[in-house]
Image (cartoon, rainbow, N blue to C red; front, side):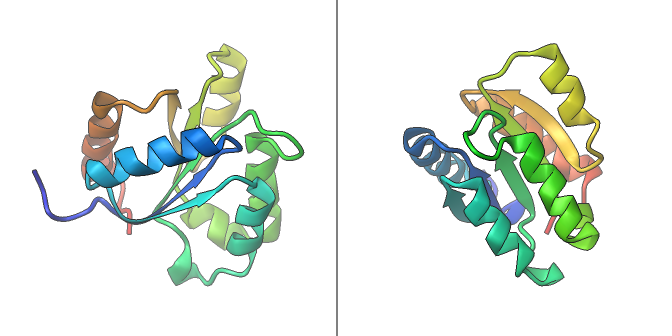
Length: 140
């Protein structure tokens, strides 16, 4: 197994505390990210990103779609409104319980969404993502 992380910092945005805990531990165990920051509120994550300098933008954001008050699509739209630089630099993996084809197509219409994964996150899903990132994306 590698010692180098494919991503220095990953954000997980999900309204389920249980999912946040499990996903964070899984990502840490697989040595996928050097630092994993969780947000149970997409609004709080939006506040953090709105004050981020480009160097502080996470290398990857795992984003749930179905959340109250601000869903994943609304979150992406708001990040783009706040800063096109942050939005353009931010790579996003949709990690959701939705299996809707319309959700998949809408998510992939965002140019920074690199993968749509149905929950739960699996070893194979994370390994596939790592391989794809190694070959295609300069993630910091």
